[in-house]
Image 1 (cartoon, chains in turn orange, red):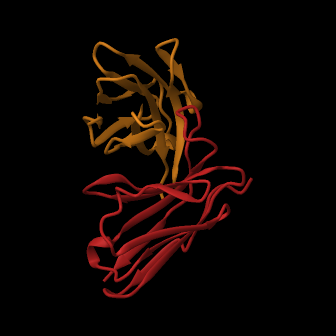
Image 2 (image 1 turned 120 degrees about the horizontal axis):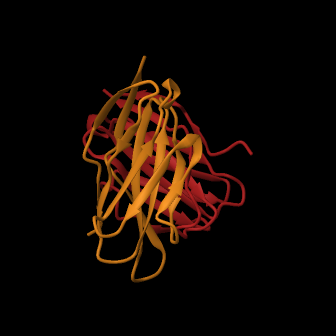
Length: 116
Length: 115
């Protein structure tokens, strides 16, 4: 079965510092990778996605992620965080089902807390 | 576009009562998903529909849970009878296609508390 592991449940960081949120996946087939962000009392929003091509993907709000096939990782990074980045971040993997269609599996989330 | 609309935002009910959660997907989106979010289990896919037809309900916890989509603009998730362990945030999401290239658009969720 496919799975997504987010190693850190919480990441505290000071404003303007860089941050990396880690994500690893397990899959024996081709996958497509996503990061979603959830602000308090809201649903999830797509931050960025990797489908193919360049392994460095840029998303909204200055975030980027790098796909590393050999390490089966898709870590999310931002060079300088802002207070407004405080939210929960979910890594997700989509894989093609043998019967057609695809299924999106989410990690358990990482709470990013930006402090002054 | 108003986005995915869920109601109510909060629901508090007593054990044994029937609970109905509602969702209006984005117009033109053919896929609708119901997710449940808890601290212990994270985000779980309960069921999804394609063109109003349920495709995969393997995530529905038990027979107490049922979901319907009578038309392209409305879906319900019903729990009868409700139990305290059903307390969670329930999200509805829609997408234009099921393909990986079509992102999910989430509603703001319904926070259910069963006492």
